Image (cartoon, rainbow, N blue to C red; front, side):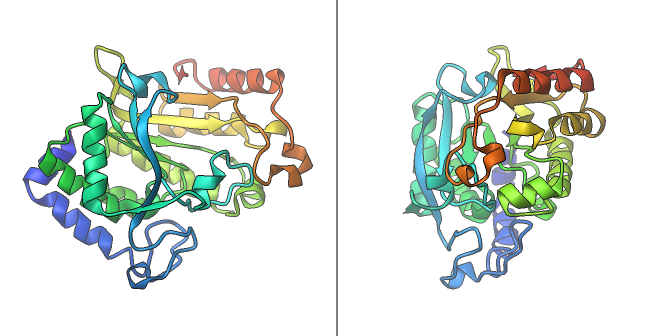
Amino acid sequence: MNYLNLFRGGKLRKKIMDLKKDLSPCKLCPRECGARRLKGERGECGAGAYAEIAAAFPHFGEEPPLVGKGGSGTIFFSFCNLRCVFCQNYTISRGKEKIEIKPRTLAQKMISLQNAGCVNINLVTPTHYVPQFLEALWQACNMGLKLPLVYNCSGYEKLDTLRKLEGIIDIYLPDIKYADSQSARKYSGIDDYPQVAKSALKEMHRQVGDLVLNDEGVAVRGLLIRHLVLPEGLAGTAELMQFIANEISPTSWINIMDQYHPTYLAKRYPEINRRITPEEFQNALKAAREASPGFHLL
């Protein structure tokens, strides 16, 4: 893994120091809320000085290229920089499930997942804990970590933070949620999501390219994009598929997801207070195929 080269050459430590500067006042994500997290304040996302997690375990419900035979070594970080009213993991994203964890303990969890046979370390919503995770990664390298790292995020990422992660992350697993700012503002509490996420996906692809699988069909590097289909076409699926085909790669790997169901606060919004129909899902798949016959659809 490339992060091992950075570790051996001393460059990983430098990246940790650079990113710690963005922690207090906090400017790790596009919100740049300025919270002095190292002095006890919490950011707009809810995160404080130390990483907090909800769970860590071998996950067999991720995309097949991320699971293999041993599962994806998934670490669910608490809190999120979005406010999605339909969040299916809202007890985690809103910090109702959280355990503070120091870098050495987090490193030990990564080693335990590797020893359990997991094929990667899957960091779920890590954006607001990048410096803390890298400190744990440095210690995990000392302990013998050698698995690919998956950066599993909402797509609402700051370019400067992503650039500092170059050479560390092997697989980027972002969402692309909305094509227009109105939906983003109404359902996720942020109006610049489309342009921020599009720029983020471009940077991710620049770093790692299309998804690459080994001989066993397990992902070792690259970009895998997730897109959740919303009722009434509110995600703007067709427009997003055209964007991916034209500005990311016509051979992108994409998981078009049909599991939307109204949860958390979705019942307050009649237009999304239902599951999607089979026709809506088929229309989403059709839009992807029309955008590029070369897409790898999961």
